[in-house]
Image (cartoon, rainbow, N blue to C red):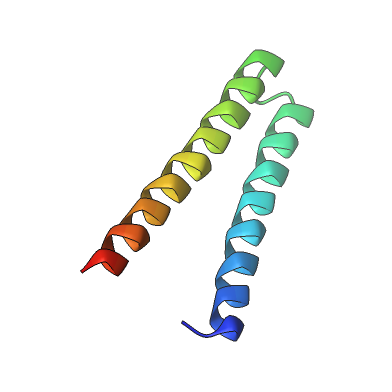
Length: 66
């Protein structure tokens, strides 16, 4: 994977994470969700990104072993 494509993937991940954070903030500011629900949504979002990041890293390490 070239450096250019890695940068594009990283920017895509950061962009999607930022967009979801903005959506959660909008929902909280518009009083559609409570502050507790917004905190739970932030925790779930962070957990998803960290968890899938860990799975992808392990997959890439195992693929290099072959």
